[in-house]
Image (cartoon, rainbow, N blue to C red; front, side, top):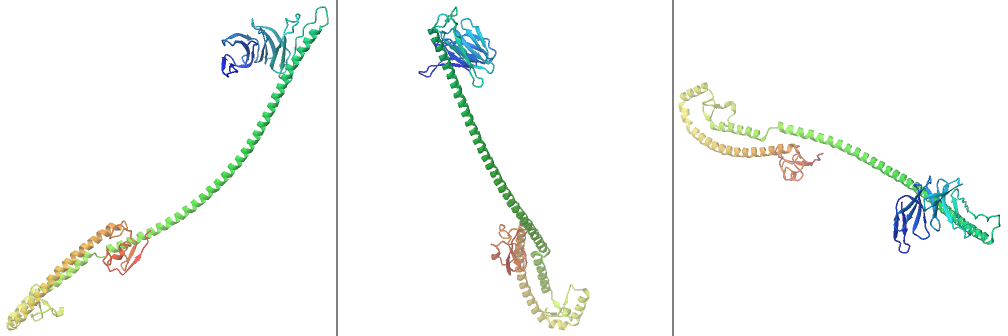
Length: 433
């Protein structure tokens, strides 16, 4: 804390005095020196021209709350928290008098009165002090001693005494007025603080109530959201279980269809059987057929009356040759009929060969289509996609084969099942889970 000297005309700081924590300040009449009391229990005299400390007065045992300077600047008066008032000689820094008597509180105000103009009392100076105990104040003045010989006071001395008393009374009245103003200000401040405290309490209660209401609303909303989320979770779990059951059933059905398809003969095997039958027919056309009498006949006889020559057995060949030798006229007579039957057999062989070529071409084409269909089916079997476009989801069941191999876009254009090549009589929509 510092002491600052200000220029009241410009508002600028003229000097800043630093050195101790100041509680009270007094200025000399000529404005060249200042006196300050501090918490460090000292009184300091300052030179306002240079800002230096002229003298440090030590002797108080507590905080110095009030200081005063004499009119001539030679003496100082200080009041302290040690309940004493001390008169100092500023020339030597010594204590002239220590005034004791206050008992209630620290001395917070002191004043030095000018001496009376009377020559007999010019050497004594008057001092007054006040205590802040409960707002009470006391003052003491050094009255001039009576004249020697017990002479009564003169009229001038009485008049001076009355002036001193009036000055002391004015000082006391001003101090009392200041104390009353300070007390009124304190009471007003306390009332304002109490009103503000009550208002703050009301606002805090309102804010607390609003916070509780907001918390209750937020808790209710959170509970409602939790209930909705629980209901949605339960519904989703039920749907998931249903979808899992549907998926399991669909998987079992598809696996059963796949197993049934694998058990059926493939198109290549069917064509191989048909080719074998065609070869049997061709072999039957290539070898001549003889009746029981050894004559070559057509193929219109029942199987019981047909007989193969050459590779059918030795006995049959020998009997046939013996009969031929025994009945040479009959064989010569049937030469014309055998030449006609051989011509017809060659024509039948040519037509059978042409049919065989066509059958082989058709079989090759059928085998190619079956292999492509099988590859597409095997490729789309695990992914459950359309066999034709390889993109759409299987959603159509073909009747009567019961295969689910096509999507809704490719099904109308297919007249045959791409898996078993069966004719499609009906198409039914299917929902895959």
